[in-house]
Image 1 (spheres, rainbow, N blue to C red):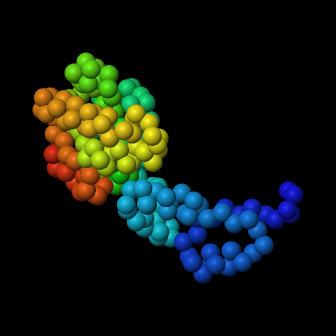
Image 2: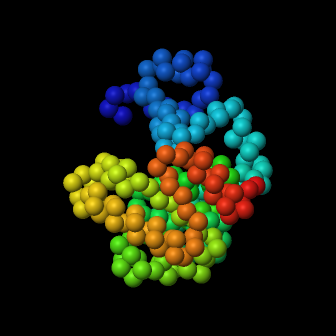
Length: 211
């Protein structure tokens, strides 16, 4: 290598050992800071850094089920796949950027639930109907909505100045989505001022998924 320095990847919990590693002449990459901390911020949940906890959990059925749930939720994020939807414990629906993905991952990671999520898009509002792929699983549906002003702010961070982020468009999408969910008798809630934990608790209670 050009610099001659070794590259060290670490997942150290012991701060004393970590500090000593950081003093060594090497390129040190702390995997917790790289991956876990961003996840903590996104999901608004603090991880439990416990030595040996991973290896103990690896031998449990609950751990295996949780990994399966996470993989399922990632594969079925944002309507990417409609395969095996019958295995889903819950299917979240709502307009783009209403909180479906972080809620799906939280339910998978913390409760071991297989969660799919499907966006409601302008084509659905024009047809005035739910996406045909999720209609057979209507009892599993739970809707998320959001204040249009907040939605516009979030979308402008991703695609500033676009029609997608325009307040008028956000108002139209939210109003249409809420009307559709109301007409289809789908339980829904606004994520605008709620934490991930509050959203998850409401979903678990509403769909009788407490575990």
